[in-house]
Image (cartoon, rainbow over all chains, first blue to last red; front, side, top):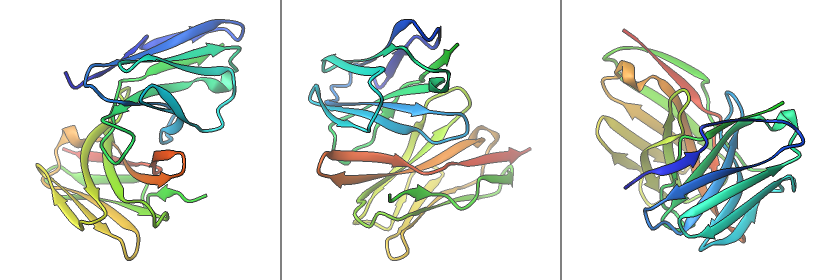
Length: 113
Length: 114
């Protein structure tokens, strides 16, 4: 299994809603990532988890809250988002947080209304 | 801050021709580079990587060249096919105090004409 699976594929939420994005991998990877990608732009790093601990937070607003319940799962909890937060949210994993290739999921297309 | 960037936002090639996509990087501490392909509505897909102790690496129909002197990376695609149409990103992995960070360049859209 060389896949990173993200759910849901699409999500529409209001600014007062609370929702969660989920990511799962069964490759035994110990590093997992959240990226945000706006249209026609490159992915931008949000968070890095290494061995289930948050190692990098790229100054992301607190309305985005990551969680790593175990080495295979990564969640992104969303609360009180703004319309400008609408984007493709990508999860990735790699063997570790060193110089190895990162595998990406298909992303969750989020629209905030 | 330091960044990874691309010279051409759009590249149009004839089917069967070779394609060359370029990338400039500015972080001299970067020691690992990856090319990703992203099709519409999908996540980035790994194509090929190269470490800084190499200057060339070949895969199936793809070759990555690294010139550390001028901080330049290129992706060559041989016999370009319609299925190669996508946005291509270079990415660099830079060690820092917080851990390794994969930073993406701006992307180049490759359009293959039949």
